[in-house]
Image 1 (cartoon, rainbow, N blue to C red):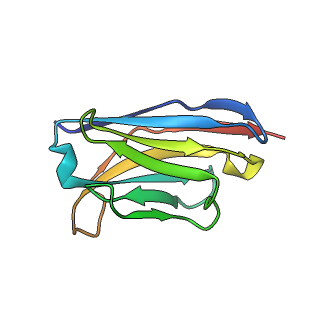
Image 2: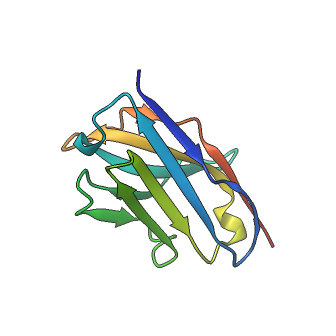
Image 3: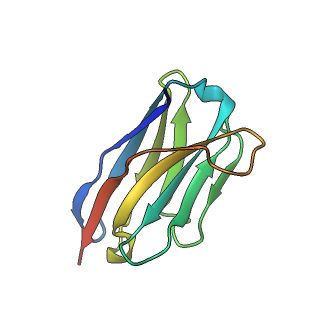
Length: 119
């Protein structure tokens, strides 16, 4: 049974930082590309960042480029999202997701962690 468990969300003031973690189990972690997405109520889910299975390829949304950094530790089966210079518009539930390398669709999703940025 595959599980993705996010942690690290919370309430932070604008300009602050948070580090999200996503611990994976039940899959061969280094066979999977990992991604972070976010969704605010009433809005569509939005891509935030992704990292390839070996960490060589990294992609970030324009809205977070230069502020958020995705990384992974394959020895710990964990992917991270370091979020700096947070803005109120970053407020959302953040989800991690996994897809097999070279596949297009994300196959597994976590339950999400709330990030709230106050102005």
